[in-house]
Length: 184
Image (tube, rainbow, N blue to C red; front, side, top):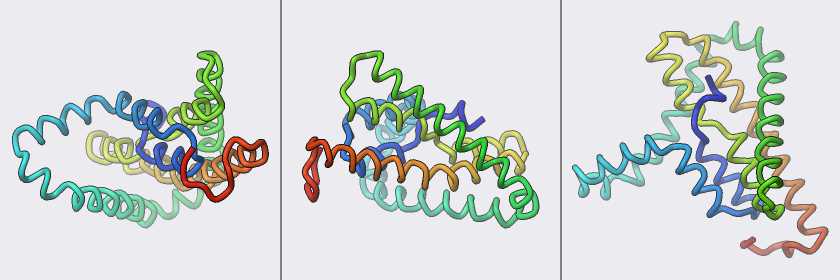
């Protein structure tokens, strides 16, 4: 279910931290989340003043709600979470590495430069676990499915942050970016 979800916005954050192609990341994330974009546009069209006034607060609420949902799932399914954690981490790591590799290979096949290949890899790897969790809990009524999504994000974040650090160090070492600059 996680793999079937659209790309997550954290791909943009990881891409920014790596000083890769943020514009490409945002574009690919937006395309993969087209349904959400269309829904967001409909709401903005119908209630423009409310969305403009409450947009930043809603973003914060969204992040807090996702964190609370992940925490709830860990507490609610603590025994299953602890029992299955090792297997889930292996599966999440494998899915992350394979998805990132597929994205990197897609960028390479399209003749993209290294920053764009990294960006496409991030967009392929990062899934919107909020959607997966919401579907698992509300539509399917299966909290245990949400356990994988929760462990997935917890396992994936350190992996992708490590990829960011390695990518930046390689780019600094080869002179692609200067240490201490804030732009790609």
